[in-house]
Length: 347
Ligand code: KG4
Ligand code: ZN
Image (cartoon, rainbow, N blue to C red; front, top):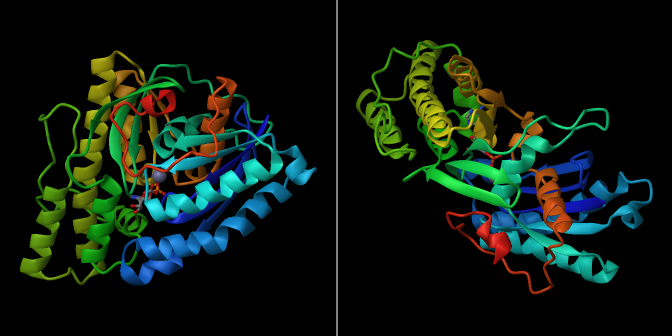
């Protein structure tokens, strides 16, 4: 079964074709980076308009990679939430039009479920199936979400804890903006952090030993803002690097300690990282070190599977289809997600 996936929940217009066993046949992502960069963040109306421009070419490109084109597509899966409503509507309308005109089954996919199953994507037919058994604990850290989940199956996913305020990626982007580094700040702060001393600037370690498996990053972001207000933007590269390294140390320490605590609490020795922040070098290094110490097996998917993409949506959709689930053309969009992610699929 070849599933065409469509993703338009935020600032990437994406389409991909994936087999139900996770083999990715095509994967196209049109980034809106240049549209939003001048504003230092995603502007919802501009995102919707860019999706409208990009959605058909992106789908055409993804399908053109199949020998038989559309004749080789067996079903359509689309992100229907959570996300920006105007942005989601563009992908959902395109998916409905394709499903209706070609008589194909249609399934809606929760974007978060897509991220949580992305670890199973196989980027080439030669790559063996990913040897990851259920259950596993997953840390999803992106620009819009930061939460821990227990994944018992593609249909049984429980949220263990989430951020009380900012997402980790959002905090990175705001710090990048405060330091005048550009947008999105995450990769830029990460790059500078590698050159600095993580112990040089005293910053609060968020939610240390507190509040179970919840995160909080707004206090840390405010601490950086107050420092910049008091001392000005650090001018030399060394000073910038020290502040970035100290900020990064606080964020990744919090992400990794809570992830390990979640594995211990759940009695699960498998941890998966996902979301754009999983690209972070500091996070990968600390997670790998701490997992080794605690006998936890760590799975970090390749970057293309961590950031927003439609391959993960196609794969998650394929799992719904394999369970015999279908959505009709009345499929609607939603902006926020309940605690039990999979309950959406059962409703
Ligand atoms: O998952 P994603 O592509 O989109 C969603 O937000 O759903 O994640 C994007 C986020 C941005 O906030 C970006 O700054 C952050 O991931 N990010 C990083 C790194 N690469 C991307 N944050 C820290 N370090 C990185 N290397
Ligand atoms: Zn995402």
